Length: 366
Picture 1 (cartoon, rainbow, N blue to C red):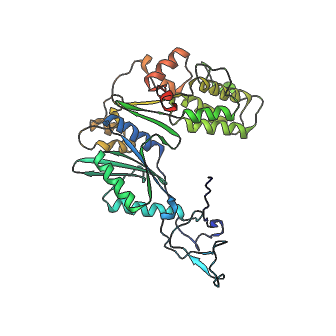
Picture 2: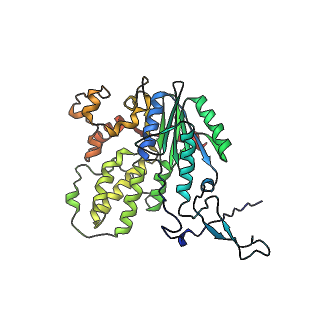
Picture 3: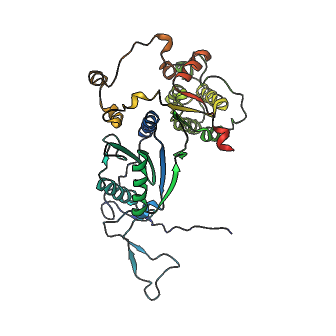
């Protein structure tokens, strides 16, 4: 039996700002917050769970007077000229995302959650010394912290909204996540392979580094230009991959500086990055318990790492949040983010920053 779905959608494109709607702003979680939470839970030994809100925008309450025509095929007999007044948001309405965000924000704050100043979609609450953190991305929620608080929160959400409990987090916004004792592994292997297919590089010969050693963008700025649209598509695709692949960060930074007038040499450099991905598509980022100590402390306010971006290094040192250490030149792992390196140096720093092949890929595919 084949099952088909139909959704009643409003013609929001006909709405006029200032007449039909006012505020439409609805924030989504920052990727930096998601990465911070992954580092924190690895350090604390927590698990991370996922829930999905079914037909998320239909849960938003409409405060303004909004009327729509009766849907075709569902008109009320003898009242065909009547219209319907909306009490809940519909997909397509300009204000639907804002209405949903307002409702879920009111629900969480009503339970005693506080919002992070750095990210309005990151909520946290402490109950009897136990911490619960929730990150919201439209209708997807991830929860981490104390397991009993997570269970209680899930029950409350299921009572308030129609939810789907997805259990432990495996996939989120294109991120593939493996939770194991001692840390977790995050990759975008499927997405990397899709990029290779998109640009017909899935059968190319792999190389060992994202850029050739000694690469200088100054040498590539002159010469014959290439199709800027295709080049921008390539760079845009790679930018999203940087979320779990800091080893290509410098290469993508270099490529992004030629978006207006890309040359053949820049295009060749872009294909060099794809050749590197061909041999490392399964690579990702390790969040290990012993490596995540900077994200927080087991004493005091463990979720204070969320506020790191708001403090200067000097303040952090004075407050004993950070400790400055001397790093020898050969151990400057930041080099992988700032210059094109030889194979030996690149692989050395790549391993030290936590980028490695996925040891669990066969396990999940089976």
